[in-house]
Length: 240
Ligand SMILES: [Mg+2]
Image 1 (cartoon, rainbow, N blue to C red):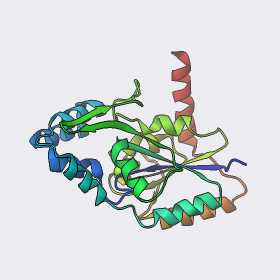
Image 2 (image 1 turned 30 degrees about the vertical axis):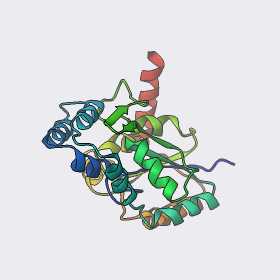
Image 3 (image 1 turned 60 degrees about the vertical axis):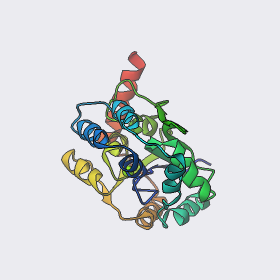
């Protein structure tokens, strides 16, 4: 039976301790990366344009070093027991990332994780550098190259409670459509600014504790404003 809860997790800084995208571009890009990211954060360029500029700024690419930096990155130790908890309770989890499949797949593989769907931007890596592509671009949202809100909207049933766990700028759209938000770092400020109720968390033990509480409830009420936003979004899509 499908569980009444579906969990959407950000990767960089949430499932994984470090922010791989930032770490990698800091290692291989120059000032142009910094410039692109600050324009993106100000809303002056789109998420995909920011990534295109970041990749174009990469110089003296060294694939071995690139891979070895990825191989140093660790998952939050609380994530594996959390996954086990979700498996036991047949709760679905998805990873949503505005980073790249390349490093997410490589890191998850190292931890023998193969049963979690991942939605991320794609990255082709060869000896000369990095070529991104964007299979999840959303024509209505330029905040992120991979608008997490689209997945939160479309990847849960009407009677499932959508839970979002995240920490950053690219989690904003996901939070807009979520019934329950677990937030840390910049996502906290966004929730405060937009009056989205949230739980502050430091790791997945905190998330598990709350989810255990939810499982005991007879009825799970959706967040009213998220429900309205979801309905609006479906209406816009249907009219096209
Ligand atoms: Mg993050």
